[in-house]
Image 1 (cartoon, rainbow, N blue to C red):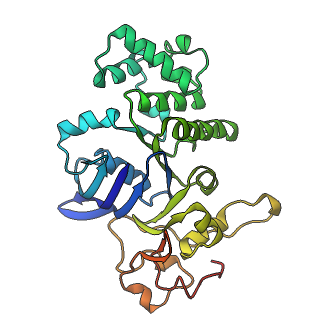
Image 2: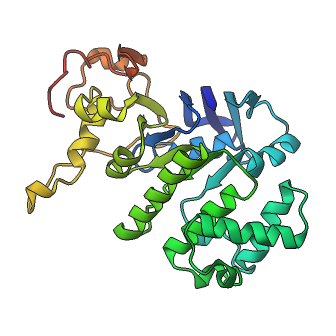
Image 3: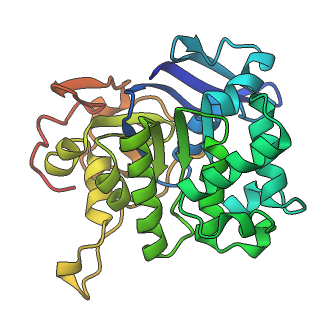
Length: 322
């Protein structure tokens, strides 16, 4: 469905290039939910925005991202206006902020549908009701008249998913779609995304910092740190045999309900600021296993079929806790 090769987003500040994310390479199969996980500031959201060409106006995007034979990076802005919605949809992190507060759901959904499909207003309204029912919004006919502020967080997120699907997109970018929701609503949204992928063959790039949600939802995962992939593999490989110290640190931070009352040690330090990246391993300033060799550029190397790691010490540290 999607083949990403060395895509990077570079911003230009006072004429100086600042790498916001990348270069990144990964692929997403048809019907697959692929996870992109990392701390806040790791470049996950910028990767998603770069793919649909909504990165900051002062930035440039390089590399390629081929969606069903069409390179999103090389496409003209006119082509991208057609591709957004028709081929690729975006579920934003804060649905209340992403939806227009001065228009009803009916107005926004119908506008989105008619932007890509030659339907009458009556036909578009019927499709809007169908979409809202598909994503589990109860009494869709009445709720079409609602403004975004009248919706709960869960209903607003469902409306955002309906809008992403409104023009028949078969590829979705879901940017932290469960972050601001309580756990019961999170579970409902997870089940909805699972069902869409299973029944409709929709592919999803699922962006999150929540390893629990990613482990539940995704078959394969890429771990992002300071704008680059440090480990990529199946969810089982990363959970059972994490090889990069950063991945191990993330897993160590995840809560364990068998250890009630215990305090887990976090990853020391903070992620580097864009524009202040060092040569070599970007994680080495926070890594307890760093050696002199880590100051040289690191390569994402395959350690097992489908499992690659960007760490010169991964084999030596295998099995050791972070």
